[in-house]
Amino acid sequence: MMKSSIIFLSILIYLTLSHALIQNENSSESVYEILKQYDFPVGILPQGATGYELNKNTGKFTVYFDDTCIFPIKSYDLKYKSTIKGVISKGKLSKLKGVTVKVELLWLKIVECGCGFDCNGLSKDGDTTHKSYSLSLVEIGSYRSV
Image (cartoon, rainbow, N blue to C red; front, top):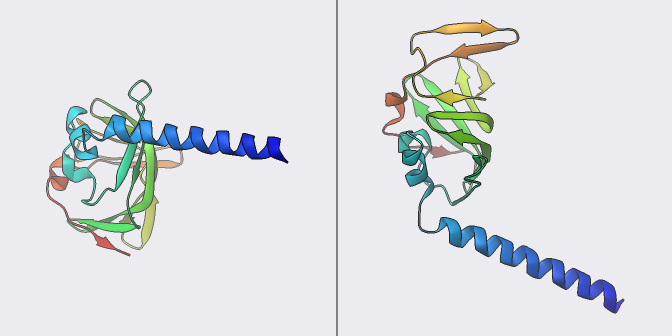
C-alpha cells in the first residue's frame, strides 16, 4: 500500500513539474506572438486563447480556449473547439484537429492552412475538396461562444 502511494505521489509531482515547465517556457510569448513568428496573422485564431503548448522542434502545437466558439468570416463561420491541435511551420498549418468551416448547411473539417495558396481556386483531390481563402480575411475577427 505504501509503495503504491509513493509511486502515485512521484507521478503526480512529475506531472505538476512538467506542466509548470511548459507554462514557464511559453509564458513570455502569447500564442498570437507565436503566429506572427510563423508568418500568420494573429486573427487566424479567435481572441481569448487561455493557453498553448508548442514543441518548437517538431512544430506540434495545442491551443486551448474556455469553450467552443464560432468565428465569422464574410459569409462563412469557422468553429473552433475548446482544444485545437496541429503542426505549424513557416506559412503552413497542417494536421489540424478541432477546426471546421460551415459552407452552406455543412460543417467541413479544416485540416491544412497556408499562406501563398491560390486564393481563387476550388479543387478536388480524391475525397478531399480544397478551397483557398485569403488570409487577409482573418486580420480582424471576433467570436461568439456556442
